[in-house]
Length: 124
Image 1 (tube, one colour):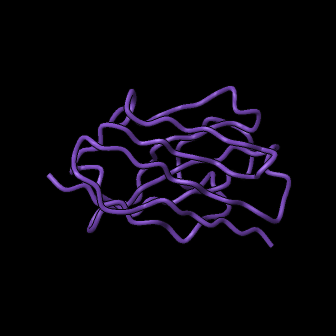
Image 2: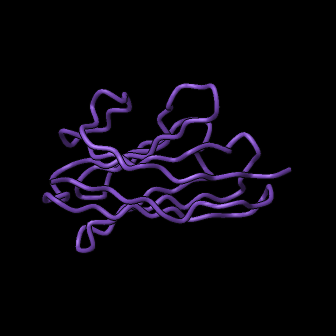
């Protein structure tokens, strides 16, 4: 059974940083792309970043490009999201997800498994 557990969320002031982690179990994750999404209150769940299985290729939403960095450690079955220069508009529940393949796809339907989410709140 596939399980994804996010951690690292919290309350920070604008301009500060947070690092989210997502520990995965239940399959060989190095074969699959992993992504981060976020959902603010009253809004849809939006793509943030994706990293392909080998960790070489990454893709970002325009809103976070240059501030967020996605990475992975396949030996630990863990994906990370380093978030710098945080803004109040980054406030959301952040979810990690495992893709059903290994591509740079950003649509939610391409992701087969999801974590429970971790709250990130950025105060101004």
